[in-house]
Length: 280
Image (tube, rainbow, N blue to C red):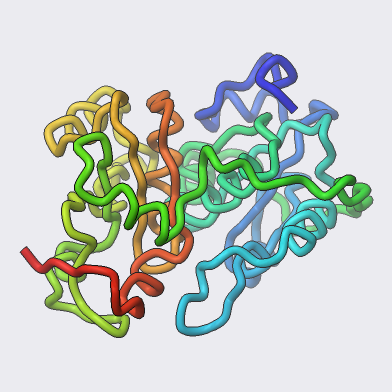
């Protein structure tokens, strides 16, 4: 699927009021990545639920790693997504899980999607229609032949190590400052990848506007002050590529031509004895 096949009336960042007017369009598939009990209680009309865990390997010590491609394609097919679909994703927590899902679609070559700005939090706060019944979903055929993951959006420890120290590479750490500086430790070692800059993922969210993204122009300027600019080779990571999924999506919304995500993230990096660590 290429950009020419994208839904012609929905932008990549869709506002609730824009989506409200086209909810019944047959090519739109709403995918809810909220917590299961939240979805059972309330969701957008006709939204299908997808468990974020289906998009990850889920094994310690680095659960964010990608599972087999077959698992990913089966998960996507289970909610009825096919190459003609335009997917609109949201969650109930500010966009991390929705963005992880959209990153997965990009890896599989499916580029026709939108992120619902503010997700369920904004939708509820602003009084848009909701449902509690679950739609009947006709699963789609699993993608065949099995797609090859798009390397343009995927980084691993080996590629980062090979590029470490390059003036072209910018590592974007989406964790909290406490994790970044090593004051909080959730892995074998504490700290960050040398040369990484810290931009905690919640900085992108506007709490006064119910977790919509802050204006993209402001976010572009703040990232530029950290050296994160469109001319750079950007790799984003966190602990398990959940929080950093939103910063990856932000890069896509800002039209960064080279922005990859590291699914192993700090959980994996901290276990690699040959991988350097910084705390300043």
